[in-house]
Image (spheres, rainbow, N blue to C red):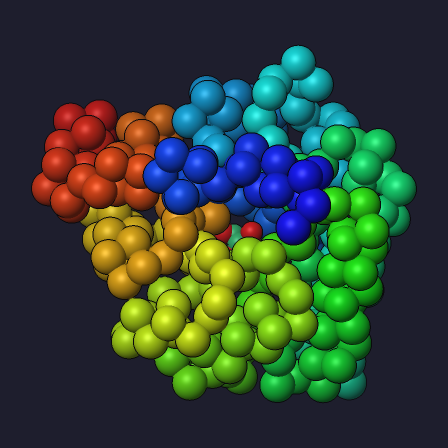
Amino acid sequence: MDWGMANRLNRMIDPQTGKIVMLAVDHGYFLGPTSGLERLGATIEPLLDHADALMLTRGALRRWVDPARRVPVMLRMSGGTSIVSNDNGASALSNESLAVSIDDALRLNASGITCSIFVGTEHERQTLENLTDLIDAGQHYGLPVMAVTAVGREMVRDLRYLGLCTRIAAELGAHIVKTYYCEGFEKLIEATPVPVVIAGGKKIPEREALELAHRAISAGAAGVDMGRNIFQSRAPVAMIRAVRAIVHQGAGVDDAWSLVAGELE
Ligand code: 5RP
């Protein structure tokens, strides 16, 4: 691996622990003004000191992140569809294209670039091509690529499906893969030869979100790329600190929860 690529990965994945806590706030690229992100800048400001990387769109980055902040950026490169996209009555969410040029990603000083893949959907091939185009461009400039295994409504979030997606993404050359936690996650980790991070998914009670992070880390995940379970919590700073304790310090759920419980009263 060349120096620039290795350096960018090491800026995001802590070389001391081999782990990462990424804060995902890219939801607006297809969901619009997601609850908690209406004033994205104010929401993330207290969280940035606790994030190893920030996943967001270029529009949000330009508008809401002070360039003096030293947080590494994982730039969302795919887009072009929305929650109300419609293809003869069926969801067309998977019909994504690449929406940012590699030049602009470099101009924005991204540490990593990312796109979604929609395996098993009508647009599987197109989204896998988006990924390989990004990987080739990333190879040229030393920019690592994270593949996001998006799950269509018709897909089941089980080991068979998610394991298929993460292995394909890694085989195609992704440097990091983001997916969902599932039963048997350690098998997915064994068969995916790059670091795997989990999304948090919809907001759930704080202790359950910590349990989810703990199960993923215990099964061998390299970390989390969590959004709603942090920024939609009533105690977002306590939540990200608790998640950090699990990811970087190997804290148990009770210890992590003790950082949050008092803040929710
Ligand atoms: C959507 C994404 C989002 O960043 C991710 O799912 C958000 O994280 P969370 O589910 O934890 O809110 O990649 O495709």
